[in-house]
Image (tube, rainbow, N blue to C red):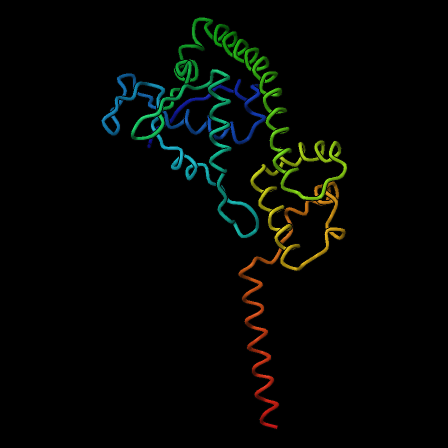
Length: 253
């Protein structure tokens, strides 16, 4: 999609600026939304000004980014994108509607972001008032979101606590877990925990030598690399080949 679009500098004073993923989603939808007053037709659907049609899977690819020295391509988990979109809807930033061709996004008050007329004839004050009202609404929503997030973290912690089969220091673990899940996301913690527990089981490590849950979390050992079942099988196969070669060489002596 060619052309240009406008964005007011007030966006940098908005709470959305502090949430990188949410900001990228909103900014991308705003930038891709239909600008023409008469709208356009896409996939047989009439899109009005300020609307954008996109599947969540394609949106996930659109938001991919590169990270690290190797410029590895990363994508946000689909659940993360869905949660951020729900938050934007709850805050009154966008509206969504499911269609057979994807999700129809509507930028609320799209005209406030576009059109130079708001800077003429003293109208910039009314625009600023609208932004301030939106920010005040966002503060109230954030309070509710904090409660929802706290409940969500509690549920996720219980899922992880039930997964980690060594129970000690639950209260401290929950406090640490709440910080880590914000940083890494639950999927990464869960996957790394499962890898560790499977590694312990494959190597028949006694339960007494399993890391205490708080030690596991403090050391962020869910980010450690553990041999998978396929790697263990491959190592065993190589070892057998080496033993076989050694036996043959001894037979030739």
